[in-house]
Length: 396
Image (cartoon, rainbow, N blue to C red; front, side, top):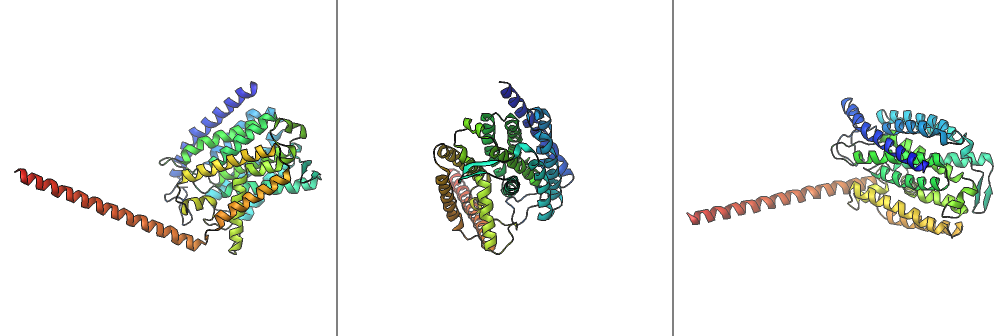
């Protein structure tokens, strides 16, 4: 009961703090002319305020102050330095673009604080693919690589209105449930805090007159928290899994299913860029959400909703399967799903020049349709006026 009351207060406080301060951020950004200018890759056509992630940072810091007593290994004091590093780097990247190398170094420093805390140490994979105990140095390699992948994967899906928020909300709901069931209340409250901020931000991100982007400031912070929660989930001791509705050995696959959207999208776009002899981090419009918008004609809201629902359904499917199936069978299924999804999206021609031509052609067709509709409307209006005039003459 005490946890429920605390969770409600944390959620309301985080939601209100984010919701009430984002308009202030918008005013400052507009006044200082720090808005995001659209380019040929952009999914928006108007100059839009960014830096929405600033609200995430201080909301998290405030929340960590109030929930710090529930962290058994003083995790809050290890999270704050990492958050601060990524906040500064993300803020600088939103204002003046920094190199991928500098961003990577900052991420490694932030991750080092988390790996140094004993609460996140993974001692065993609990029989996943017949792997049990793992040495500490291997944990550092696996944990560090995993966190880097998650942070950058989440950063890369922030390409259309609502997507990063919707996917983040789905992930946070799942982790809130997992950590509540395992009685890791500190991490459950951390998930609730981020969830509240994302929900408050989503309304502005989808707004037509008060729109704001979370920017790298926000995506790096949220991605960092997701990576922390994932590492903690995999570091849970065997007895904690007795309360979860899946087998202990299937935990790594459940973690992958929770993060399927950013991980699949990142792997896919990297493969496309490398196949086109480009750098993995070179910008383009090859992301899954761009395909849904450019090729399938969906709106930002529709694409975000579909991807978010897919993420949730995929996790539910793997949790159900993970309650009875052995991990080898689940691995085969996961690989099969990835191959099918890869085929569905790879069958399109993702050449940027071809994509640009198709987008320009679609815009041209829409303009022609608009002119035709306008001409037909004028003709109907003129015809109606002539008819009315003729009727008036007959009456006279």
